[in-house]
Length: 601
Ligand code: ADP
Ligand code: MG
Image (cartoon, rainbow, N blue to C red; front, side):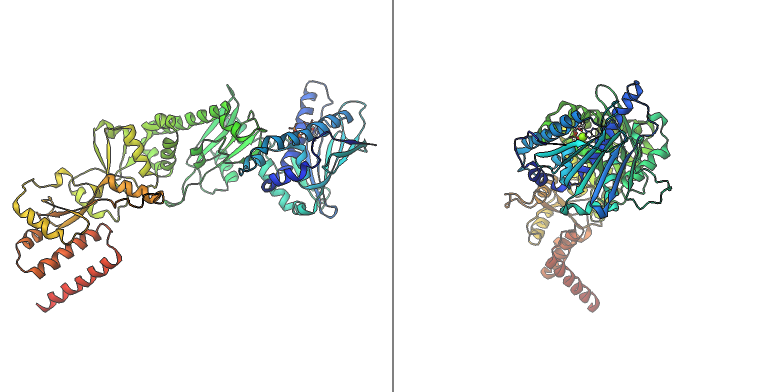
């Protein structure tokens, strides 16, 4: 047996690395199991070209022996010779760790999650183990079994081992602060998370199994995304979705990504069904590297708006041991992202063209995604704009394109059918077309559309008195009187007198679209430095076509005038949901007074 010193420049890599990877301390499992898989793939390759003896069954075993504080990971892959252990473990793995620290030294202040996602290789074993042993026997003829031992510092022992089967066993002597990894259930969870789709069967045992019972591997060695799309059935897509995303609903539809050139990318993106309207959409994009799970929703790699979807993306060419800034600027990542954008947009336009009616049944579920995508990515908007539709008040759908073709300049929209019902019924009587824009994102989305299409303008139903609503523009002198009269009670509002076609509404409040949007924006951004923002301009439109109004102006009883004006202003505010608490109390009190007067008559 020989002892050696590993030539790294710092004696205590371990504490530093431990600190950095704290929140992802379970990645050592992923790293060791993928090394085992790599060793098996190498052997498979060698066997296929006749350079190694054929093997009938490749497998990886993860075994936990709780009483001994041990976890072992064994494979029947290529194994290592003494020289290889020297080179790949003592030099490569340890210097890899050193390099890793150097790379990330500059990023340690940032909450650099990605460091944990992209691993450290063999060295990460020391995250959970106080000492690590390697027992290995190379596939090469005449090689001797090797035993290696180290505590993760800069020293190791290497000598002849006892292994008789080709392959490698890594033994982790689990350290005191990592004892939870000795629970089989815990280990199963970690293996399921990272290794569910690895290509070689992985078995988890804890020594308590009955000898001859057949245990099944924890992984699916041939995941659906690797299959040819033409060979996958609808049932398979759905089953995969249920299993991977633990969502019992069926997805609406999906896109199978399958690219070989100019880069490698495979995956499946699902459009989930939202459970109910108010559910915040939260997707999950699982990123894999050659079937090894890396992490969910890595924003450096996945275009942001895609994170509203659910899916798996496997990028074998992804450079894993790189820094975040590198990923952000990496041409590969940009290419991946624009390819996906194109595929998603093509799918949506394809579905729309193929069956508009069916497409509209999806729209409620997919519209937040489409709109968000349009806002985040100009190219996506350009590709998908012909598949943007709106739900009309009548229940039918109208496309953006149709709106443009119809040359509708002002598009009336409803954000809340309940509180805007007075306006809606007025406009309905006029056969005015109204669309629903009741999603949180719509405010921003219509700004985008107005920017892209200057010829159209969106107006909420309560900001609009259509020309057709006005009976005629006969402005007579009595209007002046009405304005003056109501001006006293409609504090803070502009007052206008107009003859509306409908004679049953005495007055209504109209909000300026621009001012209201400004106000909403300010609210949203928490009033940042804009404390003096004016309140959205409100106009009280008094309907001179309503008999109540024409009579009141002429009435000489001042008290009666006042009561009626107050009541009308309060009613207009009420139907606009803008009565304050004390105003509501006043309104109710006055209503009671009126009823008293009526009964005493
Ligand atoms: P990487 O896997 O990125 O090469 P690691 O630190 O994980 O880096 O491993 C270093 C090297 O050690 C591997 O490239 C491989 O040559 C060798 N190695 C590690 N584990 C095994 C194993 N189970 N069987 C054979 N060789 C291994
Ligand atoms: Mg590795």
